Length: 328
Image 1 (cartoon, helix red, strand yellow):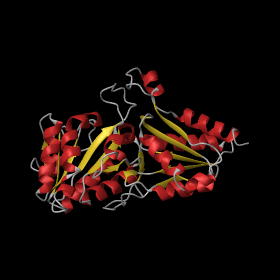
Image 2 (tube, helix red, strand yellow):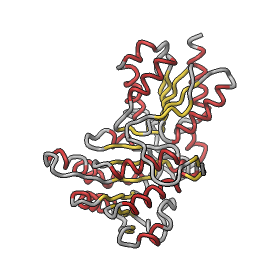
Image 3 (tube, helix red, strand yellow):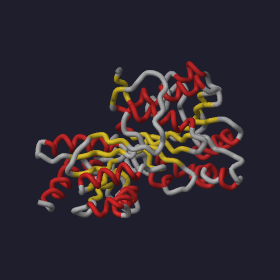
Image 4 (tube, helix red, strand yellow):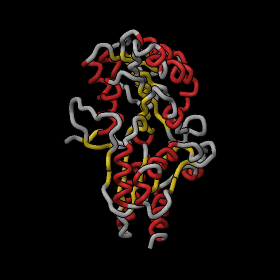
């Protein structure tokens, strides 16, 4: 199977969907000739034209509002927010309109839209362009939230998101754009709400989201050299959340570490930990659940401080080693 980048996988999914369904279109800032802030839509305007690849004014609220209106009238818009930090500007349209219209209209209106947005730290983009805010939209009833870590998952999940009749928030970590994996040619769909075991193990379960999946996998390699067998579970979608895969893994290992980049306080790591302790997996725990997450600081610009603000591979390794020591 061929290997392509995460960026190419997202572009392929959008292009395949647009070829298949004339109701699908893309809009956002600089997505046309420029190809988007991270080059994800590069070349698409040449194929589909400016009517279906629409470069917009710099107004996230207008982009989101236009998408909601288009979705209500039968279109299937994909709109790109250039940095996930700027979801803050579009929250009224996303939270008060997109998430609620289907409910408030008694099911007579559907909002089949996808918001794509790059998030996370690691690129030196500083405090206003490096946040992980996926927990905000995961909190809102009526929104589905996707956070793929690999190129394979990004393509399959984006197809599922585009075909869904509900608003889907699709978070793409900036550092994931550079990663590659085996991706089939042609369309395939990964259902929303199905987690994936990225690495099987017996001693500790690591539940990781987004770029932290890659860090957890690297930590698993290092821990294997210490004879610690780690199972890495990637939820892939935060809403709907595949709780059973997490529960089953913890029942098998008896220990759990949860790793997210979003700030620990009120972050999604707490939701993942609650899944473990509020279900049958609690009876199988032989140590408290450990949460690794972002520090309660704005993301610094300085590279070394930026690394300190979010969990790194060495933090995951250290947490797992201490967890094993505590159970010897």
